[in-house]
Length: 249
Image (tube, rainbow, N blue to C red):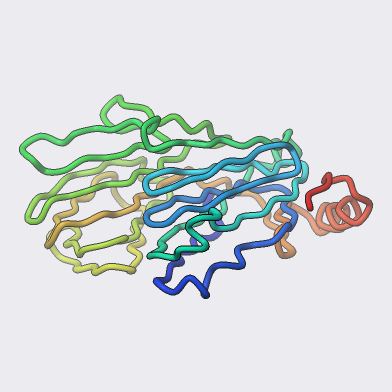
């Protein structure tokens, strides 16, 4: 169900001080994960908040929303290192026009699993790991984990073989299935021919694991609108132009 993954960051505050001004969405969810820095969100449905290292904001655009994301005022002034990931998650056809909502997931509210033998830990954003469930509500079955592994340690993960599964190396480097090396800023996409894979940290490492059930539905997209037909895209544009997405200055 994942439409886009965008990793972005900088140590130069001039690169990000402008943020992302008000813009519309329909038919998707935007998920922003903070690894370094602080970002603030406001939207036309009244949702909003500030996320910092380890926090997540999960916005459901549904039938239509305006939102803006910009760097928290003091952080924007002082600068500092920033690293974020944003995902676009597709909504099933039956839920494309659901009521917009916003989930502010503080790192202290994520489900934390400590792995035995000093292997590391997992912050579960969505989905389930060994009967531990993450707090995010989703419209289709999906998993989203932040995994922290100590140097030389490894862990195994298992997902439905029909689910699309991948991982992004946020920092450090790993060996996957005792074969493939993946350094920082690389994405690993798994084939749909097995349930389990292993990850070993070649140095202290953070990875983002994502897995989800394919929706297997037509996709029609136009910029920030993702629907199932071109007719629905035209309707989204008309609704936006007529002010039906609300107001946000």
